Length: 410
Image 1: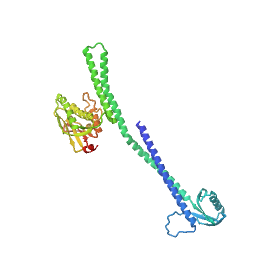
Image 2: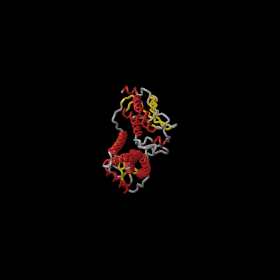
Image 3: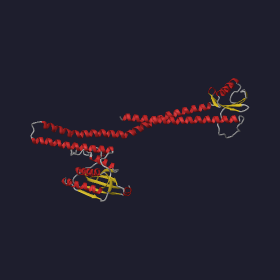
Image 4: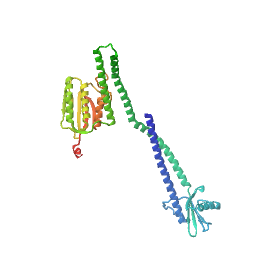
């Protein structure tokens, strides 16, 4: 699929470049042709008015000078006089042919392709003049221009083809990355669903056997319910990520008291931390207000507190701090003692289905929580990061505050 997309991108790009070059070179050729023709006609008209005017040595003239000759005819069309030294004008048959071609055409200006001549016919009451100009150099110039344009076109096409190859790789790279992430996501989700499905099927098969006691059957039912709940949790998390990827949300942005929202989340987690023997230190600056989705921001805080409670090492408290950062942002941090993590692990921890500790036993977590947290923060125009220092891992969330002045106007 990606290969076809690259080929299509290159074909479209080359088609556009070809059309653009054809238009540019066509206009250049046409303008040059018209300009040369107009200069040639202008020269002939001047000669028709004053055929005996000669240029002085060193005289600067704006019009072009082409090989020409002038034929003066009588009222009856007989040749009276000739002037111009570029051609051999002694051939009467030649002169008769060109005079006949010019007069029979009925036009005052035209060309005689057989002899590469352009003529200008001026009729006076007593006689008429025919001015002939050699257009061989004009044709040679246009031919040379056409060959130059063709050569430049081929070179340009080659250069643009190489650029198109590079642009195709660059343009398709985000699609390739998204495609690989999607395949990895499907593979990881299938793997995570495989184990609970196997447990459910095994317990269901056990229930079909008549040899087990009621107590054992109750355990089988309990195992089925436990695995079903885990699968439901996983599916809900994946649906949440799908909604975040598509930019959809079940609630609108509203003005809310973020300090109170975070404090309420902390109150719900205090008993959980107490049962685990963990201390929870909080410092929430009051009065922080922002525009956001209440359910998502509550879920964001729950994810960070739940993650800290699951993976915190003994020997230090979990700390949550919320404060203003300047006049336009607020900063939420959640830190806890943790095993050493590298910068790469701190960066990859937001990837879907990622677990820093591969040997950690299954605890109901599927590695989607922090991915959901990152999606929520991005949907609110903020940034989330992870750092490890001095034996602690710290998650930092920066969110934009509501501008009271602008909001009041609205």
